Amino acid sequence: MFKGKRKVGVLLSAVILLLSIFFVGCTSQKNEQTAKKETSNKEKTLTVSWPRDIGEMNPHVYNPSQMIAQSMIYEPLVSYKEGGKLEPALAESWEVSEDGKEYTFNLRQNVKFSDGTAFNANVVKKNFDAIMKNVKMHSWLGLISMIDKTEVINDSTFKITLKQAYYPTLQELAVVRPVRFLGEAGFPDDGDTSKGVKKPVGTGPWMLTEYKKDEYAVFTRNPNYWGERPKVDKIVIKTIPDAETRVLAFEKGELDLIYGEGTISLDAFKQLEESGKYKTSISEPVATRQLVMNTTKEQLSDIKVRLALQYGFDKQAMVEGVTSGLEEKADNILAPNMPYTNIKTKPIKYNVEKAKSYLEEAGWKLPAGKKVREKDGKALELELMYDKSNQIQKAMAEALQAEWAMIGVKLNINGVELAVQVKRFTENDFDLNFFSNYGAPYDPHTFLNIVAVDGFGFSDALSNLPVKQQLDQQIKEVFASTDDKQRKELYSSILQTLQDQAAIVPISYIKKTAVYQKDVTDFEFPANRDDHPFSGININN
Figure 1 (tube, helix red, strand yellow):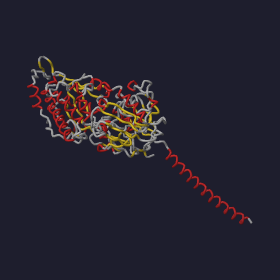
Figure 2 (cartoon, helix red, strand yellow; figure 1 turned 90 degrees about the vertical axis):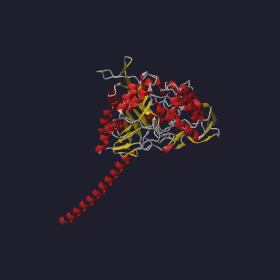
Figure 3 (cartoon, helix red, strand yellow; figure 1 turned 135 degrees about the vertical axis):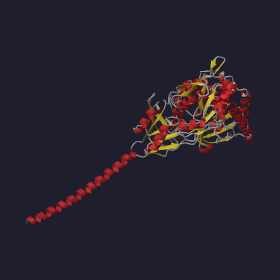
Figure 4 (cartoon, one colour; figure 1 turned 90 degrees about the horizontal axis):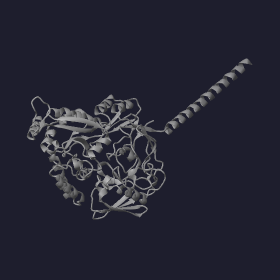
């Protein structure tokens, strides 16, 4: 009897054990599925750094607003893609009249702003009207001063009529600012956005949802976005002015991505790359790094002095030393891989004796026992202004200071905030300044436009060139030309003249760098130099 009960007990225990294993297995499987579901639903946040505050998110103004952020919120009619291809954006298609003066845009249907209001031809015109209230502010972009009138044909059709043919019209409609579109709710009561906007309302994939000046900006996905949905939920842009602090934050895992031009030193980039802990990318050349000499300054009005300064520094050594060979030495003012820019130039090679000879010919003598040349009792002393947050400009300024000292030129280097650099350049309050051409989709036409148009620094700085009037006339002709052969001839003449006058010194071809954590995937550099790089980016949780 006891044995029978024992058998039943053993059998019952076995059944209970089997049931326990079954239920534990089910629970474990259920927990695993729940965990997977929670992981897949986990919010994806990409944290990046930027050297300065994003500024006012106004699509129609410039510094201190940052284009990386403006381009996240606001979109153009036409999109610039790899290889210079122009594709539909907020305009699905367009027609251009035979005389090149009328552009009719068929707007994309069912597009909404982030606040849910409709995008249509009326709001397109309202944006153009706001831009046209401040033509002088925007005249660096040749299209703006060419516009005769804008018209709403119907709810989904918008027309621009130009005063004369202007061949770069579509390229200039693809730029980040000022021709991007603010929603109705963002406009001030008087419609003049140059004074500010009520709130940043755009049609782009992102919207600004949290912001603390000089600390951070948080962007979340626009729920009404008409295009492909971003793969990450949130972008956090932290303001970190110091490059070394930026690198430390990245190494601590506080940042997912460091991206841009000069945002960290290229030595730091190399060290992060060689550590093997992170992913890195380097772009193709996006622009030419230049040094602008102000010809209205007495010392720099003489071409012999300008040539002496060019011969007096070892460009190749500086580029290799400062950029670790990541940038290429530039001999052309504009990179020859851009439209109309492939001209044959004779490179100015490093030659200290030739530099000294030019200075002697210009009357700048080196008194016995002194290190700085003099003429008529005045020392050959110049100031070079650079963006203090740009590590490459800083290092190049220091290299130039040392090299020019060897030919008897005292160079004072002055690191300033970007806004100050831009202001002083615009007001012609400088001797030498770092600059770069605009890159895609702007050039070569936009670069040459500021050479000719007053108020943006270049035209004033070059005003003492004996060929300035001739250059200005040729630039007007090339923009109005409808003949491609004539355009090529004019561009070749203009660029060759600028090279020969030696007031713009090509230094190197700029490349963007990116370093990112290993869980960041699908990173690509944008075709438009100023656009944001977040379109396809993802994070593996």
